[in-house]
Amino acid sequence: MQSGSGPQRVNGIKLFVHRFRDPEATPSGLTVLLVHGFLDAGGTWDVVASALARAGHEVIAPDLRGFGQSDSIGPGGYYHFADYVADLAELCDVLAPRRLAIVGHSMGGTISGLLVGARPAIAERLALLEGMGPPATEAGVAVDRMRIWLRDMRDAPRGPRVLTSMEEAVHRLALHHPRVPREVIESRAPLLTRADEQGRLIWAYDSLHRTTSPTPFNAEAFKAFLSKITCPTLIVGGGPTGYHAEDEAARIACIPGARVVEIPTAGHMMHWTAPDALTAHLLTFFAEPLPVKAPADTVAPTSKKQG
Image 1: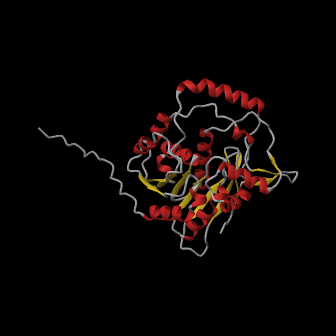
Image 2: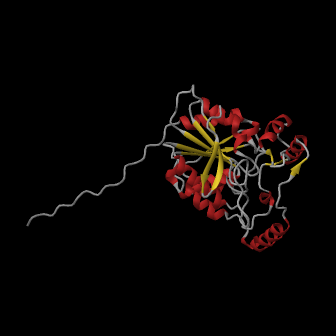
Image 3: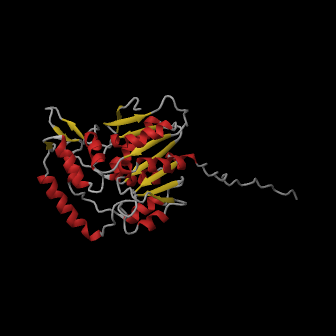
């Protein structure tokens, strides 16, 4: 089902883009951009992406910078939300799909919300899968976060974390995702690891991702971005075992006309644990007619009376 996957240069780095297309399906004309979350990779969208492709959609799922097969940032650099937003914006500009739907999970949802808020015309639909942003943090913790980040940057290992075996990778993923079935973890582990130049098994992400971000999350600023979203928006929750910020309802209320659905037993990693249910919601959402935009107001020319 994958077709034409490979690197795409944006912002001076190479992003690996997983592409899914079914040559036997009637093309829908819609390109779907799937944006993965933290410590994830574009390849783990495979089940959802293949089903969307069978429905006729062209699907692209990039590995974000520092994840999967994409480039890591160079010495002295770091990873910030703005970097991911800029990468996706340029990727969309380079690929120039005629019609685009963006689907973001977790951190990828936050990135997608920021992008579509800043550039509302970039997509005709947006789906956020438990991607309404991390917990709000008080301004007063900014100093402590910067101190911790400076310590982490000083002490963080600059090389990759070497794994002894795929079994160790499965074990560690299971500890991080205790609610995800073991067989699902086993199918995801090969997509989240890779061999380095020496043939050693390592995690497919830059170790800097495990450091504490120096910048507190500004929920009020994020809500301002959400309020600028103009396209139809679907919010998908994973039920009581998923992730829900305390002020999630207030954030959702910022998006005009946003619709919320829940997959009650999916949990946070819904594209792993409930791909069929998630795909069904996305396909229904993509098939709905787009709202008719009101024509721009026009001002009738005035006439001067002849005296």
